[in-house]
Image (cartoon, rainbow over all chains, first blue to last red; front, side, top):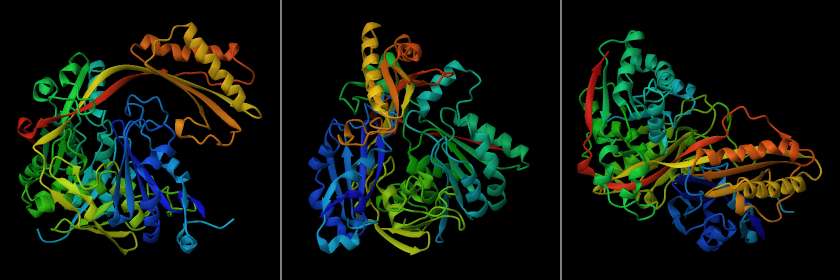
Length: 117
Length: 451
């Protein structure tokens, strides 16, 4: 079934210049392969619908069941130049939590705060 | 030193809370309390302020508050302090700390100031290209405010070895502030990249304070932590091999869990296998995390690779101004009125000939935070703020933004809510660029003081 990423993973964003890194962390090790398979750099960038101007580079970190997405051109030219109210992009990581993940039935019990409709 | 070294955080940025620093000083049983108070543009902003306000001493504006909160407990227990509160005037900060020590009755305390990071006067001859755009740094000459290199842990460790109880610095890489005590106490070789990688990784976990103890973390129903209004700053119990347990003072709010540690591990990291610091290249991909008890996470296995021959330089430049303002709509049809207001502003900016490099008109409550990433089917809000901002070359142009919003009060549309602006609606932009400098070109100098 299709499930919003917020039930599969948590996320945090950080800033450096005009680059935002948005790291996504599987809630359990069993959910991590879903991220690796489905949350590609291309889909990640597409989910931000043009808010990320430059390249998105993906770094899987299996040791902590996480993927780091380095998003260039995501902060309006950089923290001090940005016209965005959230110039540090601290809230940017929340947008990816709306990404839809296909979760096989056997993994539904791993999901966080999820009840089937 | 073969025993466990206890290093605590006292601040993660200039505006951070003071009471958790006091808590760590009084109840953390710390060997070291470390303060990180500088953001990317802190130095440039301080330079601008110093030019305008000769009375500004050029160090952390909360230096007195932070030191008064922690000095009594730190001096009583023998906890040493490492801090980058020196900003553009580490000597001034050291002198002020000495004065505070005397006032509090602590005499004979050795204080060190670490200088050398400021290289504004020679940055254009020491550096080549701007990392962000490949242009020569010489192109920044007309707008240059300040340039500073990110120093590493070595000069701090040297000051500690010379007996300093308090070391105050200018720009030092954030993790290095927290690793310097390890370098000194464990007697690590500065080129021992395996140990320095591990130690710098622990420094990275501490540098953002509460972000590893439950701050920037809670999300109701998904990631709950106890008493998120009562967070403590972290403490690392470090072993001589650079492994550590991350924990916090018992009885405080927040949490130290695998989740909080993982989130902080990748915070502001790009390639997790190659996290560049002045001391070492850190490899986080080999990390092992283990919940060793309540609010205790054991961190081991962080790797290191030899440091690079260069140091990062941050170059601050004047880049014009931003003008911004906001007004409001509510009730049925709030969004349609906001949309007409946006149209009116766009036309008004054309009529008054606003010269802007970039203009942004958002609907706060709908798309002001995520911008283009906002889902097209996002629900219509009951209340919405129209927020407008423009980046311009001159302050005169930036002022036009607020003046056109003023006009919306009587020349706007139905049900326009507007605050009466009392503050300046323009601000100066300090652009920050990066470059690299050969490390041997930026020697640190240390001065010693005594209370």
